[in-house]
Length: 276
Length: 324
Image (cartoon, chains in turn cyan, yellow):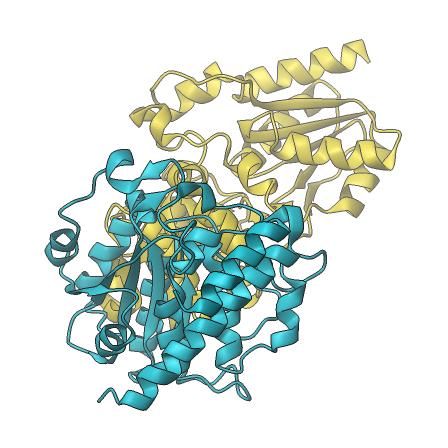
């Protein structure tokens, strides 16, 4: 059951994550960061890390932990502050984002940071990693953990995503959850203009998956979708807004990957504080 | 325990490299419960029929979807399994090169990648199924051990050794069915350690994979002309056996590399790079596939067209010696 306190907790976490995203991008200076596709994922990650994840920060290799795979690795900017919410990494470390020698690179990598299962960044590979991880859990009769793979909708242009989707249902991987951040914009423009994938939901169904189409900024809907566990792999298709939360970034492809000057940063902060 | 006796060695040779791979798979599965076999619709072709019958739940056939196979292998490896993933060498090294690069090289996940019919063993099917650049591709990637066994016995040995290391490993299988036998009896095999098969004074032929046998034949021919050859079986291309190379460089007038692979970036590349780095290299004659695609045809036709038959190799070595 989803209680009001959990919903509230996730919403509060989302606010802090957005604030961190702006701070981290500003502090990264000219290096900039993937703002748009990170802001669109804030609620999706907040609900996982503050709402329902099975993870023990004091025992990061716990065999029954949920495995999280950020296939759209460029949303690391949202992942790290979400991990702070779950006590997996320390808040101070966020200041090192994209700095020389930092563990917090622009894409997740295997550098000793707990809670990062795989390096990512090359799109289209995460769902196969999830398939292999689920096969391993299945072999070990380790049925409690779930494997959450976060993908972008643009990422689903990659054929390898669909190779993985077919194998997940072939092997009956009911522990696998694909969460697709459908912010409808990719590097070069609107996803439907670049490569139309509609009808998107029926594609997943046809590949043998159970699907939920949800509002990816509604914490209650997200938590309900995460809670569901059936006998098929689950695709949560989350309709989101790229750049969500900052009016001048919303649905603006210029904020896919960019830096923030002082003026823009302060303007964005003001909007966040006003609770837009 | 697997026995390296005459009967087994003979049988493995008849089965060919893929068949020997299947034999080793069964042996490995019996000794280590974490060993799994993965294929991309090549269960039969890769010699895994017996494995499938004996361990049906330890074989994963991903269909004709190589990229997904490597990704899934990475997931299994991360969770502690030892996945051996096979398909045609061309497909597992170039079609899903990015998956290999990210999962095996960057993340160092201990996948054991088996490249079937490397070189010209499937050459009748044309260039799509040949693989004469896989050593170059795999060598360029950090953290991957690259092995090219000399015969079927060495295929078995290499797989056994690869399963015991935590390193991501690529094993390229060369040579046709009825594979010529280099090793008639058991011997000491260690990854990264070249094996000296013959001792001579004039020329050192550094050979890998299928070419080890042909190098021995060539050396026998050269001996009739009074040219004596050392033969080094360089079964591990990376990490290359530096000591063996330096020793060969010191003792001989001419070094020859022999590989069923492009002369760009494979064994010749590895040897030349190492010796140039150390300084004072002797002349090196590269016997390999010059930068071209041979026409589809039989194995021996293609080897001859590429100058890798014994007669051509002998002539080129004699010619090179006469100029040096």
